[in-house]
Length: 65
Image (cartoon, rainbow, N blue to C red; front, side):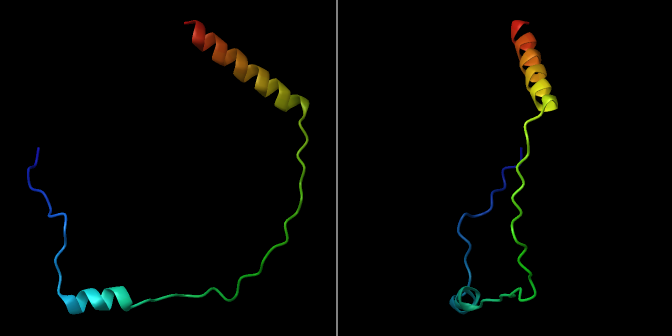
């Protein structure tokens, strides 16, 4: 195991620290087109019920071992 540990506090000059904390670079996304939300109601079908029952059976068989 390597015993070299980095110091937990980074030391830097005051001018560099002030520059890093005051400089902000941002990019604004102005060309975004908001898509309207389409309400889709997925129906619970027989395949979904079959999958639920299959998952319960698999879980119960794993628990019995």
